[in-house]
Length: 437
Ligand SMILES: NC(=O)c1ccc[n+]([C@@H]2O[C@H](COP(=O)([O-])OP(=O)(O)OC[C@H]3O[C@@H](n4cnc5c(N)ncnc54)[C@H](O)[C@@H]3O)[C@@H](O)[C@H]2O)c1
Image (cartoon, rainbow, N blue to C red; front, side, top):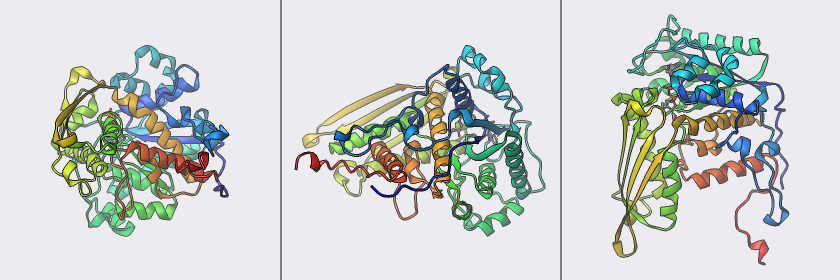
């Protein structure tokens, strides 16, 4: 046992500001409203249903995570957000079509009360989208100041003690780091000049970090993953996490791949294809937005298989990822994976996976958990990249000198050990000699 980290109290209201009130956001918001009224269960959420083993297996100490660390209560959450469409959260949830109308009806009044604030939006970064609820400003700096004013006004109006911001907006076009992203000063200059290197998502992230808010990126955009944002996060003591929530096919990939690797089965090919019919699918139908998603989806296997250490097994892996926009399916995505394996003496085998999932149903608990854990991190004085939240993301943010950890089981161990560390409990190594010595 070590001494626990000092963590400020979780009492008081927690404002959760979502950028983009689309399928994922509205499913999260309506879900939390239904759950806190006892109308539904928080399935898939580690903060609400997970337990954590403490000490030796013989001690029998396995509290629930939300009884072990001080997390904000669902009752204390107040939601708000921005969108380019004017419809309130109830109408947006109906448009998204994820939750049943009867379920939405039960929380209709609460949902209707959430009206989107005008967005920072520029169609150059999301080609397949346009809407009327958009801010005007003389430059991107001015737009960032308007978002800061929104944050402060929301905090005052709802009497929030703390706030967290999460980007749940559409996937922006593929962008690479440039000189404008190098330092806080170069970024602020680029804001003044409305530099093309600053997409809308960066304007929000900058505003959040300037205000010292924790920030998460649920999409694959570059957003907060640039040196200027990391410097700002360090300066303002903001924890950050991202990128791109690990939900359907990539979740399964990072469950299956570590198993194949553990048994040293070779993989020659992994072909992944999806059909998806929601607005996200429509945006991803644009090749430039798809490129951002593709980069995010493809990296996981390379890191898990470590082809540089196991060239005979994984060096020539052919990894293909496709997303096809197919409106009839709406939010109910269907993913197919074909995996070409090699076993003992080089004999080939195949594994086929057909996952009929619901995108936003898998995403909502991730939004909730990352918001609650980032709020915990802030109260525990942890700032910058929160690698222990890699568990939730397809391309986890990481320090430049280390590779990202993609194996879901290592990620979970990292997350739980961080919670043990915060509370001064022994870290669990799974050595277990003490039961036999
Ligand atoms: N399982 C999942 O659903 C999943 C998994 C991983 C990542 N994501 C990512 O999360 C994001 C949200 O997914 P979704 O299914 O809710 O998409 P969606 O299209 O239903 O919602 C996105 C919303 O963001 C709004 N928006 C776009 N740009 C904006 C801006 N600059 N400011 C304010 N609002 C803006 C859009 O109007 C839309 O309402 C997407 O980038 C998606 O790729 C989703």
